[in-house]
Image (cartoon, rainbow, N blue to C red; front, side, top):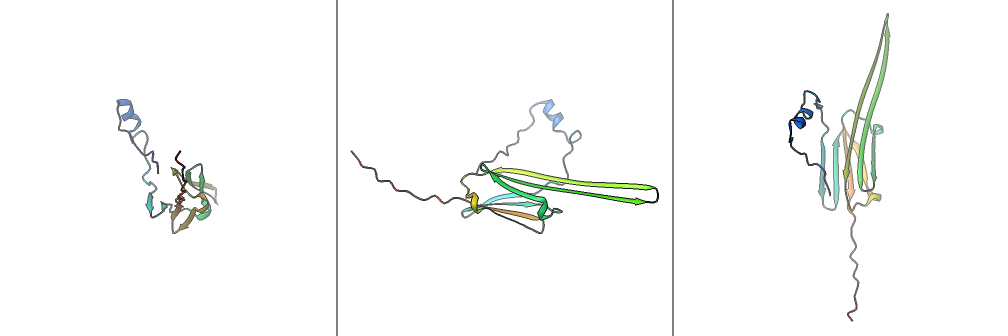
Length: 134
């Protein structure tokens, strides 16, 4: 499994500026994600509280697992002379590269706000070729 999760430390004053939380605040709510291997399977577990099953899509294309979740809600209220409209939007996307996955046997389940994806590793059949020595 390959990971591109290396984060470089700031090297210059300019890097410090663009990584400053004052100018670019980070979300207080970060989505927890666990990736681990057990026996002959990889597992990906993602906390997605507040999302519904129909808000989530899981794709595996060209050895890349893509998990997306998008939630949109609009509400309108009219009272007296007031008009109120509220929109809520939340999006999540994560991509993880795997290799040697049996993509026809991937299983995804969503239960109580946690998405669990099981990615079976392809079992390599040992092929014995007898080579004639000349």
